[in-house]
Length: 200
Image (cartoon, rainbow, N blue to C red; front, side):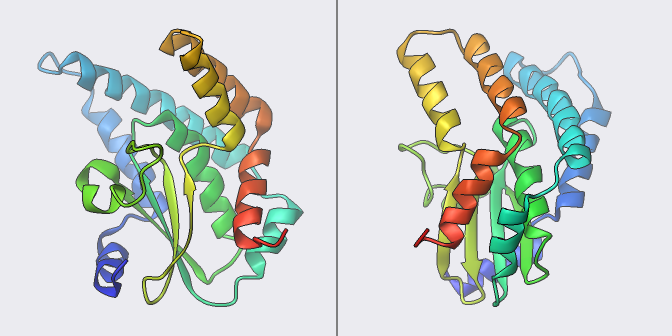
């Protein structure tokens, strides 16, 4: 990623607090009769995601292991997160990543909307798809240190197996969010630890 693009991200990317305010503003606008079915679905997902984000903010504390791994970062980094307010996986993972990053003042978190930044998104596809959230860790010169997303490996396997088995989307989405509730960020923490310490 070019240094110029990174500077643009740092300037225009949202802080986590501003991102949460954006979620709230979408909800405050409310539903209207001109919404398409897809827009109405996204609105309802956004409302549900606000509840998820607020719950995780209140209940999640990074483990000593991830805190130790993050604290060993000694040079400034930007953790760029591609996301969307309606994305359920983002609601489950972004608050965790933000709390991990907060353990080291050298890490700056910036969130950008996927659909407004496809030139970046298309550099970080998952199985050829624009899956989010996507975390990209960058040095000050724009060098990519690592990327992660869009789900922990076990969660991704759950979804793939469900789709291959012909399970309806509504059903496997419930199974996925139950997995997130039970896992409490443990798999995500371990995957980030492995990315920060690739020799582990």
